[in-house]
Length: 99
Picture 1: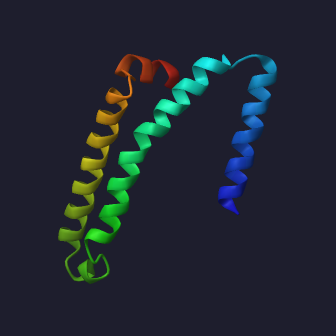
Picture 2: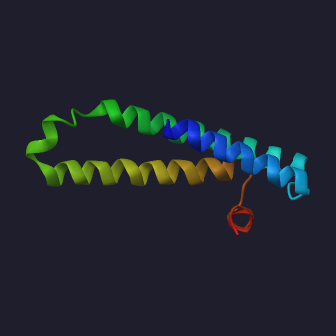
């Protein structure tokens, strides 16, 4: 139900912004497509990480578990920002849209 509410909220926000003319449609759809393309390898890596280790068995060694989690998250960040560069989003453009 939280996911449905979040999707409804995002849809209503988009409709409201679109009605006010705040979204230049072509540029935003291209930007959204680039972001979604960059999320594919990011998601694939995190999906693999979820099955690469028996996380339940690692409860006995919390520091190892924390280290593995931090390593997978760091690798995912590198993959994501590398993929953003490959699809043509530069740091300046990424930060400009975030403001």
